[in-house]
Image 1: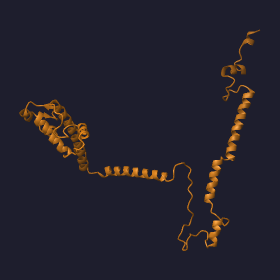
Image 2: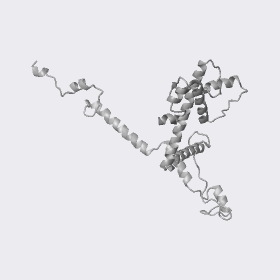
Image 3: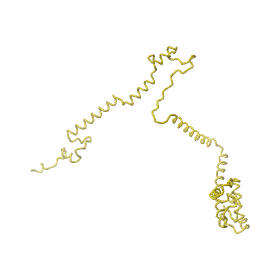
Length: 262
């Protein structure tokens, strides 16, 4: 046998089938008559299915179209109710009532397609409307405040309230630590120590009232004065001074403003 007979035919169907497989039916790789026929049959089937879908609509679609058509079509004299109205003097195209003050068109029918209870859609819509109204009011409140002086005053007030709360909490913690070192089991005033201590006293002594008599600013002034006079301590300097003379000479003052200006 010659060498030419042993050479592989790279364009033969056998060689292509060995390379890509018999089940590969991608365009341009149809290797046999059977695979080509199968692809053509699938293509024809797909076309017939599309024609069938276009000609015959699903049952739900047909029902919906017929329902809409029936609701949009006015009733005629073949309807018993309409026939009774005509006998009582009703004329098509006129309103109901002795003086034609009633409705001109029948009450529209609203089909309910979901499983949500009656009235819930309106309730949810009302909640959404109220929420959007609150958001709009907040946006309007910020947009109306166009005066730079009013805006700066509001920001200063918010910043002062934040500092006040922080200084009061810090003073209560320091007072609790220093009083505890002096073996005190209760504060001089109920609000001299942090609130968790106050809650324990309220549980142990239910008859005692835990109402606060002073505003936060007054509490801070009283508490810092107590720390300065009793322990020679300034919460803004974070320092325990040797005596009252050392406190007066080296501490800028009894308020945060005194330390900010320093």
